[in-house]
Length: 260
Length: 301
Image (cartoon, rainbow over the protein chains, first blue to last red):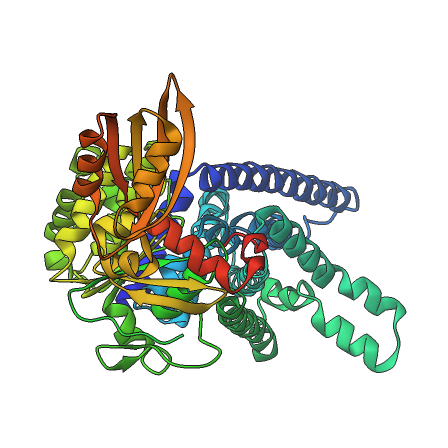
């Protein structure tokens, strides 16, 4: 456990010494700010129009849950931004160590492979926890000027957290396959997009393949969380994807020793 | 290949590029598994008890494994932590190894900005952390300037006794100066194991003397051939009436003073006389090319 913490510290330290963390954080904050503003203004316009229509027909304004709609579409859009941001962090996890030869240090130190892998996984995962925490800046606006229902917001965050974990695990596995960061980054990004667009393919498929393809779509499983529904099948989907990613990394690092 | 290293010994690994030096070291350190055979350190098997073995090894790979964005001190603290140095001892231990390899003056510098020599020394410092009984150094003096090379060799000699050192190199003087025992490997097989001194005398059947004499060349040659123990004389060059000869003689007989006497009593001008020792280099070439002429076209490792 002490070893894992040492690796997490070093890894996180590296993100913040190099420009990577700052660039990713800046772009993420900028994009999430713009998304929030866009969502908020369009929801406000809609609610205003509905209120005006209601006034024309001599009725009171229809009840619209503005903070709820804003938070749902805002947090929903975070999943798309994360899809782009996660490869930026995970692509270097193992590829850079292999390129610099530092992997030889880690694999000959009195550490188990599992400690190395978990250390790296937790480091990348905690970076995305920090990233998600920054979305509380726009979210706080909703709490200051309105009364959003906290339940769906909490489940949405839980969903985004599990979703990030699973993508980090898959990205880490892909990073362990190559020495080249760019190759790892493009491969991860391609894989994530495929997992995202798989539900489009599901629309044209039939029978069992349709069921399988739509089950594999990483974004579909997030919908329930966004609506405030906490279903075990979705939690298990993300957790199992995470475990598969970590396990494949374990096998890949093991094979690294054989290939030298 | 099979060999033992005694406690406190410096063992040199010598071999042409691609001979398997790095691979052997990687197997000893547990970075790579052996496809057959075992490595035991302090009675622990590298394959069955990797963590116990790795605790006893300090390893400097061919390219020092440095996180170049860190400072020297923070890098060494990290390596100390993963090597199991307790947090109470960590600061003192980092100071100790920095002092040992003389890098205390750059402790707060970013590793990326250091010169190659300093980087190499940070790599050595890293291997010394937690005072492992066994040190495995893969080409420890590569990229250093002559003064630093000397310092590192002195350091290695100093470490012997307390530590067991296995080092690989293709620089032959390094082996002659630092190692107690040499293993020459080629194509993954041991071709010789001995002390550098023994290797040198074994490799030699004859000793060679260079002599430069002013006088009539044919008479000189016959006079030299007449000396006891001489097996061959060859004229090398001639400048202004003085000739250079290469004289091979039996290794058990030192004929230098006889030779000088023979030349001087005949009234010829003796201008130079020195014996050349067959270097480890020649022995190395002899050993690694004797059995297999393909040794030269293997890829560098």
